[in-house]
Amino acid sequence: MAEQPPRRPRTLGDARTEAEAAFKKVTAKVAVPPPKPTAVPGIKEQVTLRIDQDVLEFFQEGGPGWQDRINEALRKAAGK
Image 1 (cartoon, one colour):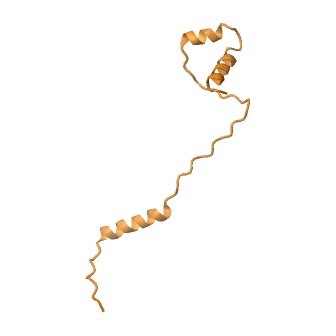
Image 2 (spheres, rainbow, N blue to C red):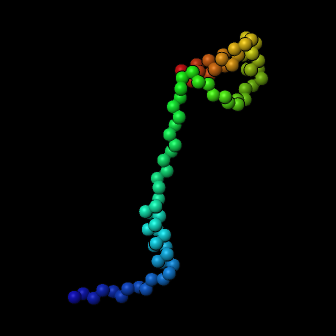
Image 3 (cartoon, rainbow, N blue to C red):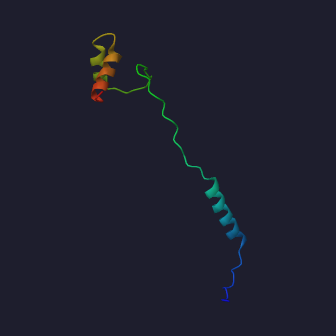
């Protein structure tokens, strides 16, 4: 029989490190991104948007409905 090399005595630090590593492997969870909410057509979302004063005045000069006109311009710029 071949002789095995002498075993190195374990220290408390080694055992703790190995135990923590084994525990992390077993308990590690893969981060799953939250599901994206489905966009319902026609539903508007309130946001805060900073627009240059001259651009805002341009859309407001047309009277009521200026927010819809801005939305339409943004939709066109987005290619939709």
